[in-house]
Amino acid sequence: MKMNKLFSLLAFLILVSISLPVMAQVNPQNLNNIRVDELSDDQVRAFMRQLEASGMGDGQLEQMAQSRGMRPEEIKKLRERVDKLKNSDKQKSGQGDPKKIQSKTSADGRQLNYETDSLSNQRDPETEAEKALNELRSKIFGADLFKNSKLTFEPNLSIATPKNYVVGPNDELLIEIYGNSVASYNLKVSPEGNINIEFVGIIPVSGLSIEAATSRIRSRLSTVYSGLRNGSTNLNIALGNIRSIKVILTGEIVRPGTYTLPSLANVFNALYSSGGPTENGSFRSIELIRGGKKIATLDIYDFLMKGEMADNLRLQDQDIIRVPVYESRIEI
Image 1: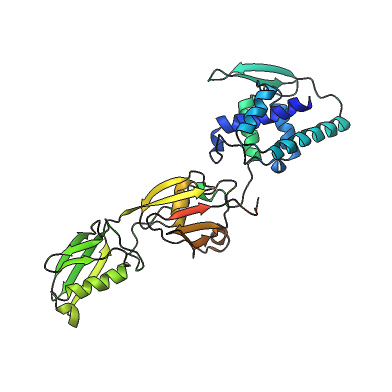
Image 2 (image 1 turned 135 degrees about the vertical axis):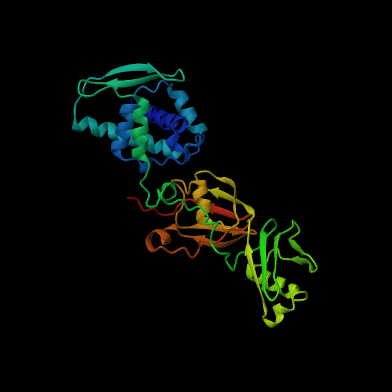
């Protein structure tokens, strides 16, 4: 009986990790994130009741749990918890209410068992498993931040051109000359990082801030438009269409991978696109890596508690955002 209850609980962990969409944050082929210490006694008892008849053999259950990465020490803890609860429950009460096991066939042809008793309605294991899993998931402070439809964290593409924006290939520069002389140019930065202005020539601008690029372009244009030197002619440069960049999100991310984002995107924009940190991910030590070096560490709680976004830097092409496993946790 001890082992039967243990394997029933293992069956629950395996089955829900395979079948339930709410486990989007957990790799369905990997059970190494299971932490028995995070299960309350009531949750373990609920799992034992719900999964009395999992339909899987004992050997098959243990083999599957091990193959999917459930740690030996967690299996040992689980066995000890089940034994302890069983003995404790026996001392506190006698035989439980009589129950009947009934079955049904799921949409994919699996035979499912569920309990009925005189005091409750039929309990479908699929429904009960989803309910139990929702209770199991920690209510982590800030976990809903990237799932809140009212907080989209989408890049604002209508803002004035930031002075520190770094120009790159495929950006479009809108150049306006006005005053004693009038002219306008819509120029796309070439893959080599240059723009080509008629009668002025090729000007390298890639890798420069928009402020530095404006200064360089002004210097070159002044050879043709002399009013730029004495102030009778003015120059304004802004971004037109902006380029896309590729950013890699790795570690404890809900949907890790490479993302294509507007070049005005920042770290929060990227985290929002990827679903944010998983249940095991840190909200306090999110790393921004550029050129192989960590250049910033973002603490989401600074934003949640103080409204501060100082480390929410603008991203560049091939940046890496890494979310490590949490070291400490605040739950609500």
